[in-house]
Amino acid sequence: MDNPNLNHAQHSNHSSQMGIQQHSQPQTTSSLLISRIPKILPHERVFPIQIGSELFKLSGASISSDVRQLTLSAPSYFSEYFQCQIKRAEENGENVANAIRTLYIDRDPVTFRDISLHLQGYHVQPRDGTHFVRLFADAQFYTLPKLMSRLYEESIFTSIGHREFQIPRELFTDPGNSPNFFSLGFAIFFSNSDELFPGLDRKDLLRPPSIVPPSVPYRSAETFAELLHLLRGYPVAIRDETHRAELLRDCRYFNFKGLEQKLIPHSISFNLARRREEIVLRLKDILKSGITIANEPTHSDHLAAWVTYARPFVDDRPYELVLEIGDENTRLQFGPGSRIRAEFFREARTRISKLFEVIATKLNLPPTTQPLGLLMSKGGASSQPPTPGNTPLSEDLVRVTLDSEASVMLDGKPWAAEEDYGLFFGGGGNLSAPSSAGGPAGGQDSPMSNTAPLSLPFKRRRVDSHAPGGGSGEEWIIRSGQWRLRIQGAKNGKAAVECVLVAVKLDALSSEQARNAQRPFLGGG
Image 1 (cartoon, rainbow, N blue to C red):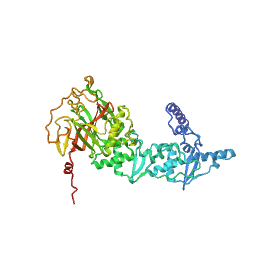
Image 2: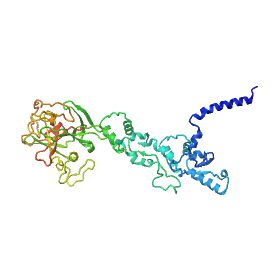
Image 3: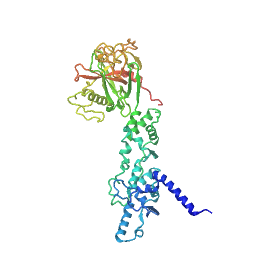
Image 4: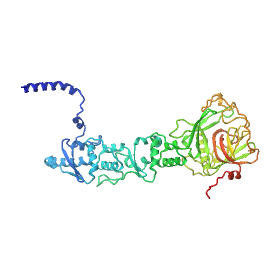
């Protein structure tokens, strides 16, 4: 028969040997975790809390677990109630166990089940928008800062077009897409984990105000899902311009500025003939923050430069800008001496004026005597009407260069220039690339180009009989046009430099008859 004393001695000896290892290991027991909980209430004592029709019994450790670390004197709703009972019992010499009364709160017990799990150390994950706002409202009402902080870091729950979305907050951390509709609009209520019910006095608050899940019922759920797909970094195929317009409209509604810049119509390519990268953008999509100037001085013009552009929040470097102006808003007037001027109408006139004003600001030009003050973000308001002539870069009619490299369709037929029209320096030079006489000063390459000088190509054969210039007073209506913007020294101008539109591609009409010839029938009548 075994000797119990011997077994006990062996067990004690084994325990003492193992004790060295036990004390050498980090303490990871629950007692260590509990010891980190402040002693607002006695940890071992159980406190009854009835929420609605359901009774909960939580330890003092659980109730004390959710406090502000720096201000332990700010108790929760529960600890404040039970602290008062314990203090009163101690002052009256009563038994604390008999003095504890059940705390009754007329709130939802289903929501409190998750709150009690949080107090017991479990991670609580909101299931949907309704669950989220109920947890958040009760966490504020019960003064549970840790739970509020965790909820603040949770995904944003919202309903778009009657469809529920769970949006990770990190999708909105990109500077181009934040702040946005959610952080500036209804989600501001959930944005501050320290403020309890903004605008309400917590002391006299009987119950928290009713909060409904965030909802935007009148926007398309399908379009918003595609925007989220783009924000996650996945491509979305643009089916047509109607589809693009839908995406852009909701981008602007939700204030996703960076995403909007990715979606605007554009084309970025490398022009091998010019040895530089170009970006084609519509006039209405130009923002002042994207405009820069690339100086390219030549032997004959030390002020020469090109307007470049980088889409804000998207492009990491500027490209040479090719500006597209459509909707029949441009008219070219051909004057004597191969002189061409452009006149703009309607919205294009205002936008060109704003663009020239911004370029003048980038060039540090002094303002005109009665400046427009038309910056791209302002949208107007001046002592003079918005015209290019009220900027320091141009007259009311903007100088145009139409050289032999421009692609022109006139009245639906190809048109080719036999000479270069509208050049500032008469006779020589091709503005499509730095010429041998017009390269950068000192013979160095352009900051935007490493190309060797290109000579003017042979003149192309004229395809039809239209010949601008010669003082004929001929006019063209430009249905759509693409232009480079060249900065060059001005002769007899109101400033030392002027901005010239260099034609790249034009679709032009020479007469009303030509316009009528291309007018489509509606059909079906």
